[in-house]
Length: 342
Ligand code: P6P
Image (cartoon, rainbow, N blue to C red):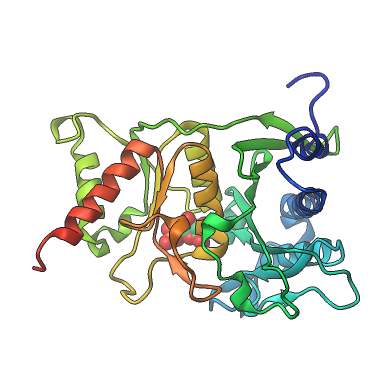
C-alpha cells in the first residue's frame, strides 16, 4: 500500500470529474453506502462485546431467523441513505415492502436495494459476512414510487457492490467501468483503494457449491460436478478443489480474487422456487461485478442480468465465475433443454 493511499472519496471524485463515469448524485450515494458499511463493520466487530450476536424471536419477511445484527445493519443503511437527496426509494431483504423516501427529505433519481447482512447465520461462528447492494435509476416522471419501478433487469444497474466484514473490511464496487476493491484503513478512518480493475481468470480448478444438495440438483449441474469430482482420470483431465464458506460475499470475493465458480443452482427441494438466493439484491449485483471482472453469471441457459424480475423478493439460480467453466455449464443446460423429454 502506498504511503499516500487513494481514498474512496478521491477515487469517486476522479470517476466523476476525470472520466465522467458518474454524476455527483451517484458519487454521493456511494459514499453514503460506504459510510453505512463502516458503521456495520464496527457493530459486527464488536458483536459479542455488545451482546448483539444472537437471534431475535421474530423472523424476517423471508420467514428466516432474524439476527440482531440483521436489524441493526438494515437500520444503519436506512438511516444513512434516506436523507441524502439521492434516492427515491429503498428495498431491503429485511423489509417486505419498498421504503419510499419520507416526504420530509428531498427525493432523488436512484433506487437502492440491499441485503444488509448476507450470511448472517455465520455471525456466531465468526465467519466472514457482508452487505450486498445494487443501484438502479428511477424512470423519468414517476410521481409515487411503487415496487414495480424496482423490477428492472440487472443489466440496468448503474452501480453494484458488496462489503465484506472479515479479516479485513473490504468494499468491492463497480460503476459499470470495471471492478475496484477498497480496504477500510482504521488509521485513515476510511476506505482506501487496494485493487483496480479486478479480473477473474477464465480457467479455474476450484468450485464452490453445497454438496449436501447433490441428490436434488438438475442433470446439467450434476454432470458438471461429477466431471469435476472425476478429476484427472475423468473427462476434464485435471483435479479440482472445492470451497464452500456458506456466505455468498465470502465465496464470491474469493472468485473475484483468484477465479473459480460459485454455484447455488435450482434444486428439487422446493421445485417451484427458482433457487435460494435473491435476484434483485444478491444475484444481480454479484452478476454485474463478475461480468465487469471478465467472468460470466448464469441462472441456467439464461444470463442472470437478462432476467426480467416479476416480484421484489424473487429468487434465482446462481452460477457465476470463471468464463470457461460457466460457459461449459451453460452449454450443458442448453444440451439438456434441447434433449427430448425423458
Ligand atoms: P446453505 C447465507 O444464508 C446465504 O444466503 C448465502 O450467503 C450463502 O451462499 C447461502 O445462503 C448458503 O446456503 O444452503 O449452504 O446454508
